[in-house]
Length: 170
Image 1 (cartoon, helix red, strand yellow):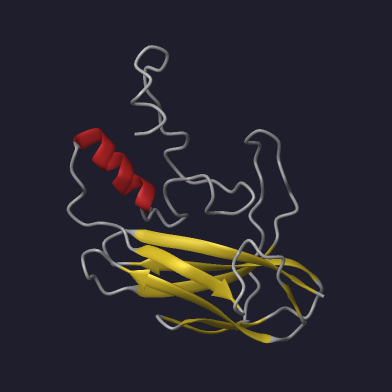
Image 2 (cartoon, rainbow, N blue to C red):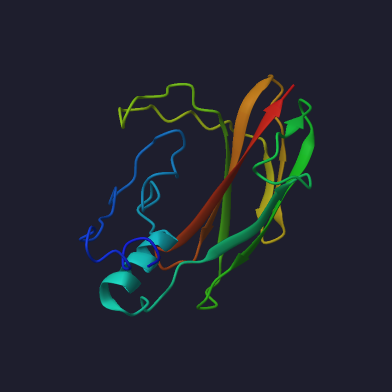
């Protein structure tokens, strides 16, 4: 609204970059859908811009994300085999019941150029202790390295919200 609409002489409009899902740095950054086909909030926003109305059932929202009291922009360092908590606030505008899912992935090391194929890192199993509205409790890997913890909020109507927090184990 602020960048495109005011420029009526030089800008004819815009388009959706990727109507789909792909692994590029993470499995959640560039697509409008999750790997399971669930819609993300950007679909709601595009629906609004294209029709002037919000969809009948909206995507949940995630906010206030922190890992051990630090936000995802901090340089988070944790110890191996440390029990930690990812906290967040999840809300649904339609008051739908929410299902919380989480996964722990090593940081992607196969970094393509300009949209090249990238393999999705393998999930590290067995480290998620609990996942619910109170947050994600998990153990850090024993091996030093860069990782991300992902949280997925699903509303039962093919709508989702997702976020991830990177951290180092050393």
